[in-house]
Image 1: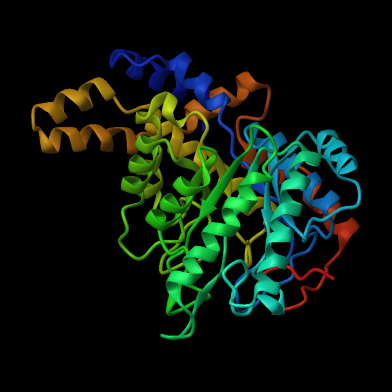
Image 2 (image 1 turned 90 degrees about the vertical axis):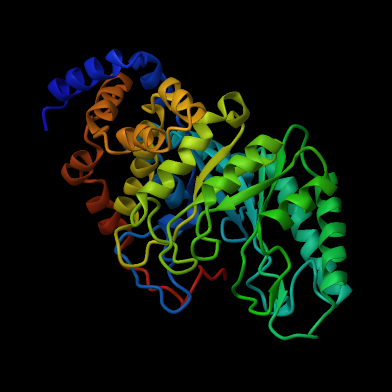
Length: 407
């Protein structure tokens, strides 16, 4: 692709519609997509984890891989960590090592879903001793935030029940609220607590935080710095996620995203891979919100099981870039005029004109101006980074199904 000539043609067309191409490029250059440490290691589905050559084995190797993805894209400057998967003895050293890799530590994610004592729940468990242990872990993660400089605590709970009558749903609701209010008190100054939800799995009768409304109501009871985290895979079939995003933005309670894609449920597929229109619609609402979306955190949350960890992560970041670029190309003046005139198809076509635009030349030009390769995929294929880490790390066999297991 001759991106320069294609870019000039696209820029000329956009200028004719009154769009400021330089302003669009500036926004693309400042985009921030956080990658997850666990996406670089051997993790996969609930049924099987296939070992991948060169997969990261330590937090240092995860940070190194994340730094490489940021070097290719220029828009992935932070790495989310999961505790205890990424637990360390010296968080200043971890922070310094991340900096040497060109990235920083992002959201801290507690883990209260893997240990045997959490079989009946963590902070909603009927056993007060288990609840205290889970709460202590959440508080520990708040302390780790202070040590790493993170300003985000990202919370997801597997808590729920499998059978009617197994436990009191209302009492579990109260336990959840009490624990999150206490966790909120331990947040470092200026940080935020993002509350995630999931409508089913691993609990199949009811989940304690099953949808955005429950997460929103819980956040309201905790305080201004408690917000909702939208995982794009955690919804029932047919859910209009863009509608949820628009509502939470208007309420000032959209804290961030865990981006992935699903076809059936929480499939953890590459974001934008099987429904790019949905991702575009989400970004349209974010762009429409203007300054109200300034503090929204954008994080990848995927497990690459049959694909290259690095190439899968690279595609995930670029798919977010593409969706954002297309959303920035919507002629919002024309869209508003057609909405107010009741021109249903005219308004829809205005959206689709942007969605159907090939924005790759625009992104390539933005990358050139950022001093990075205009084609990250070609750079990845021609580079020797993956070959070198395969030689250095070899093939580490995963310990079983699902998420990483901590020794």
